Image (cartoon, rainbow, N blue to C red; front, side, top):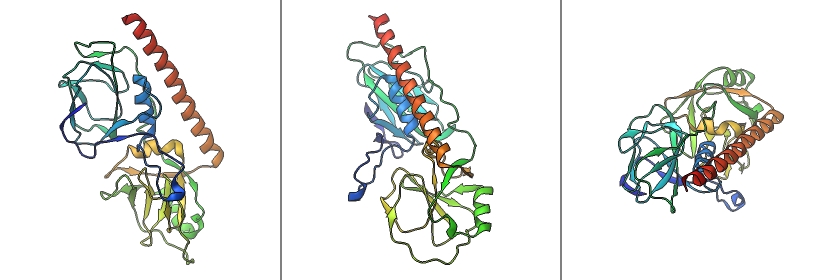
Length: 287
């Protein structure tokens, strides 16, 4: 793709790269790994291929070759040659076609996966007749959390507030972490902590009594109390929230967190299997 107009924080992102945290290198990767994998599956890419992560206002790009395209995640009213195209559905676009996004409708991040069609010359935009429409991506259901090692460092009344009142997401939030806005939590007297490992979804308690949820660009260690951890299955849903949005938390247990993660992985495997079959049938029919 050729860049026509630069967008806000458009970057190529893949899945997190684990294994180097002990050397101070964070895993990084896409904020919403679920949408990234759906997009890659729809065009027949490898699970680990990078896609374009876009925020609004988004960039404008031109395709230089015949391309298979999939747009997942947030709804920014994506267009090809100024004609609106659907989310979660593979689309063939011809050389010279221009991709743009008109306005944000829901969500915070769009994921665009592409694959060059080496054996086909596309002459017009063609939407292929299957789609994957994942549910519960933009729901207002509470974000599920597990208690952290320092959960008991806030008073019982603050624990109750944490779980019963909504938090706002601060405009200063970014890929490193979401700063949440609420009445400061009341902290019990405690000793200073030794800096310890953190990960995406770790909820840290700041000295001010406010909290921050670490996201994809998080550091590898931190010295603030770890009140809780967002379960992995809910991180993509949290990633599609942004400044001005509100959210609530609810406690769950490790068995539920593991079960929900397995459900997500099974669903993604089913999507990959179905898309592989559909693309194979389409290529056979085309030839």
